[in-house]
Image (cartoon, rainbow, N blue to C red):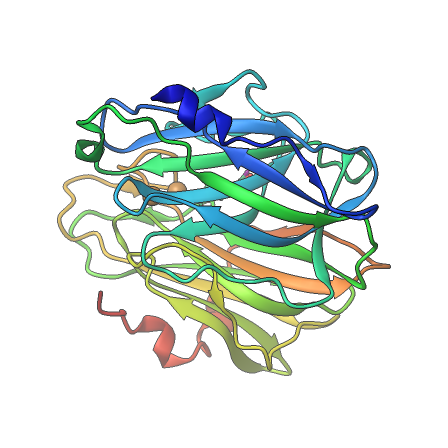
Length: 316
Ligand code: IYT
Ligand code: CU
Ligand code: CU
């Protein structure tokens, strides 16, 4: 019954003068084919600066393959939900990812005293929830789905803000049949200190392993390494590795062109590829840079020194 589902969507709940929760739920949807991506936008309920301090997922394991939460200024739509399966159908402007839930992976918690800063003044007026519905057979009984997330939020300024550093390749070409192609990305880091605590890797079918490093004085330190064929959640990062002015950030994605009969390029469809390393960090609030990215191809000379582990596929 669709109304069951809708009635579970609560308006923002106020607990005291500072703390509240926001429910982000699908409005009782019934996907009709497998691998449907649905998105829904929700206005941030206050214009004041506020902080997300915790995420509580509500997802049916048998239907939801993954859920992503983005923040942005201009969602593709603001009325009900829409199909966001094709190329980047979430926001008109730049979307920044804040949370990922994936089947069989433990969701990452924000550390104490850390929050994602949102609110109309922080350039983050909307939440966009994306849900990938995998196997549609679970909908044969025509039940409606209202999976989603509850955000625990506060108006209380947090000592640290959370942010995302995205390293991505924009120019990789994978030749058909070629056993190994590396996508290397690197940038000098020239901002205030950041403390990585989680990372997420993303490729499509051809990705074998994605690794992210900090390079300091020529020494490579691993921040995180994962198979993009495992659930694409945020996994705990190596907490000893912090990043400061003068360091270099570097990522390698290892692809195989085996099984392809034509060149594979970076792009939005499942026949294309992507090479992404997302690093979630916290930073002192007074600096508050919530999003950084790196799209520069790494030099051959620099990547001569990458640790051998970066080339070792992870069995799935
Ligand atoms: C070309 C590419 O690699 N796209 C990635 C990274 C990306 C994410 C966001 C690029 C932009 C963004 O605003 I957020 I411009 C990409 O689309 N990655 C997908 C999701 O769309 C987030 C992924 O699952 O990581
Ligand atoms: Cu998925
Ligand atoms: Cu992709």
